[in-house]
Amino acid sequence: MFLEPHFKGQRSGWIEVICGSMFSGKTEELIRRLKRAKFANQKVEIFKPKTDDRYSAQSVVSHDENTIDSVVVEKSTDILSRANDISVIGIDEAQFFDEKLTDVCQRLAIRGVRVIIAGLDMDFRGKPFGPIPHLLAVAEYVTKVHAICPHCGNLATHSYRLSAEKETVVLGEKDKYEPRCRICYEMGNILDLKIY
Figure 1: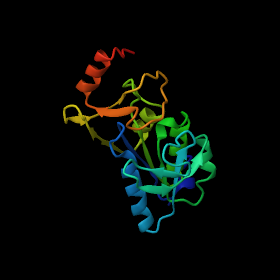
Figure 2: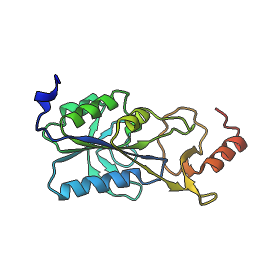
Figure 3: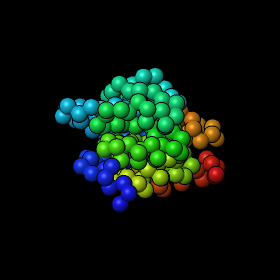
């Protein structure tokens, strides 16, 4: 009841999460949704973490080389100060943001903003990655996209690390990762003695 007068007549915002393994088309889907919003003359802004500079320091780029201009931010709270008068906000590589991202997205949705987030749901160990599990819990819409396992042709749900690095965050592309189904992922860990 206390909040009712403040929000009366305000357009409701919401949170959409696009998640999956590497090479599953998360960023491609994010870009597609944002371009549709721009085509509808909605004010759109996309943010990416400073840590992700694989293809471009300033743009969000999919593996298929689709691009969209973005704002690079160091921490998730920076998004709030740069999101004034915006109808639709995209956030790419959300797993690299800090744990405050969930609160930031909820605050934006309360302001009436449509928030579209793309990120890995699991790290290379098969564990929930960064703020993504919390975002999945509070999102109105969740889309899980899949790659294809190059070993068996089944749906790939895991990001298998080909290199020996042990750190959770290691930027790389096909030189360091490949998508794998659950069985091929587990078999690879056993054969490579990558037991975590």
